[in-house]
Amino acid sequence: MQIIPKTPTTKGPTDMFTGDVHFDVIAAGVAPSRLRVNIVRFAPGARTAWHRHANGQTLHVTDGRGLVQSRGGEVVQMRPGDTVYTPPGEWHWHGAAPEHFMAHLAMWESLAEGQEGPETEWGKHVTDDEYRTRQP
Ligand code: MN
Image 1 (cartoon, rainbow, N blue to C red):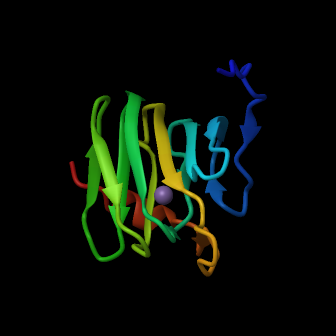
Image 2 (cartoon, rainbow, N blue to C red; image 1 turned 90 degrees about the vertical axis):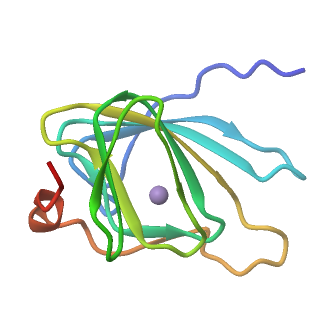
């Protein structure tokens, strides 16, 4: 058994996030595990840039009000207890609603041995216009 003390909080880099985003690493699996779990906290209006995960990603909202969108789809609200799965290679973004904080667990798997990278591919920032097209 291993008890791992809380890791320092990291500020989300500005080339990958808009607004104030911080995350803590909760789990970084030791091989053969490829488990990755972060808790990510978004200030109101903050969001990821467009991105996609080689092995998909599961989000689980723990607090606040969030938004998520897959490319070509509607902006969907997320609430505490909601779980959202984005399959491998699907472009998407996620973040807080305009007037609410939001926290979610982000769970994914790192690249398998011999799997071509990148683990997460980052694209353009989510513009204010894209962000504001959210559904009521
Ligand atoms: Mn994602």
